[in-house]
Image (tube, rainbow, N blue to C red):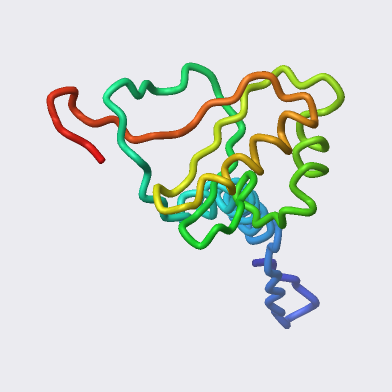
Length: 142
């Protein structure tokens, strides 16, 4: 707040500083931009098949998920069967070195999983794995 003296009169000048408000808004925007892909990917509900020999992936894999309705999700975004190959190629590039993990609901027909594996293989992906949930080795599973 500033006070100007012009003779005997006082005049109060009030200014609003917008810089802190803009800083807070930009920080919130960045937080939402970072968190949105993580939240979208975690919203896909899959009932994975079980395996006693299942292990956690050692490195950060790119993931294709197939939900129980047969909808394909690549990096949290819905992808049609027709566009799957070009989406995978765009992410992996001409010489894919990163691994691809295919995670499918246990009720998905096997031909849908084969379709995804074939599209990845045609692009040149060499390392693929299938996502399962680990079950205790003594339990029976179906």
